Image 1 (cartoon, rainbow, N blue to C red):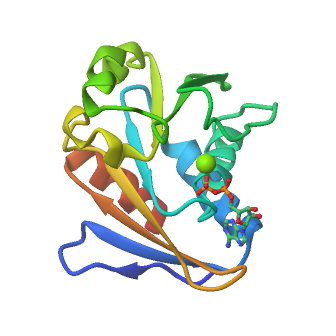
Image 2 (cartoon, protein in one colour):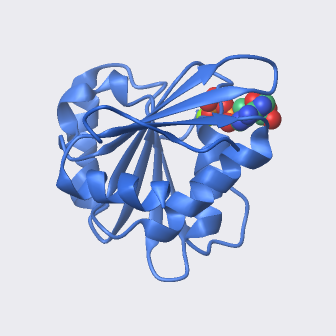
Length: 162
Ligand SMILES: Nc1ncnc2c1ncn2[C@@H]1O[C@H](COP(=O)(O)OP(=O)(O)O)[C@@H](O)[C@H]1O
Ligand SMILES: [Mg+2]
């Protein structure tokens, strides 16, 4: 894993992953920092590594079981060591308004919310979310571009850089 490069404003960072294990490891490091109320939004094509990253987050939060792709189920729930992890996959959302009915951030406030395909309902997420964009750069290489939208997500980003 290469050292993350610092973004100009300090609000972004980039990791270059050379395999699923590395992506999982960055996710696990983030998972150890996450607290109830935190939201992480994961963007990127199918197969880019979003679910692999969620597996890492779950591991970092102390969840022992397996995390699978949730494309047919909108919400998954995993019990970590201290907090719950809620995973939403909005790929099959039919209309952005559907997401408002889910009231995800309220439903998940006792835990951490991680969302795949957040662009299906961009209006429902708080600005202070940590955004991660996955770029497929080769068969086993991925660029992870992290962006903090506010003070709390900025703290998470700073923690990851350490
Ligand atoms: N560096 C990498 N990071 C993450 N996944 C990778 C990487 N290299 C190859 N892969 C493979 O890409 C696929 C990613 O799948 P998945 O995480 O389900 O994607 P998504 O949830 O974004 O649709 C897996 O088969 C994984 O083994
Ligand atoms: Mg997925």
